[in-house]
Length: 150
Image (tube, rainbow, N blue to C red; front, side):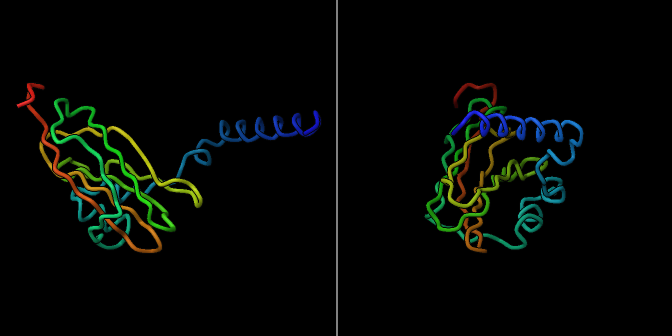
């Protein structure tokens, strides 16, 4: 790379950042408003993917058995399925069950981690869309009262 190429790249990235500041709607990622506002997991899943997901051992959901603090529950989802398009995390008994949706670019590892908020003991479900089909894994996470661990 020569100096001229580097300067052009810096100028182009600066222009894109400036465009994002001037047009914030363009810079914000698209999101499915109906899915995030749904009041039941079935409605959220239907709004996001249009159908129910089949349980699969190819979707690995990692969450604690007991969460002593429901405000910050770590959740990870991983899958080796081919042609993964997106991953979503649902917390069944939350007022809005869809906690997160991740778009997975082609050619990248399908491995996401986040923290979700849970008001009470409930199922956490990970849904992976791959090759036009949806697959899921579910785990019950117990939320303790007062963080006593019991």
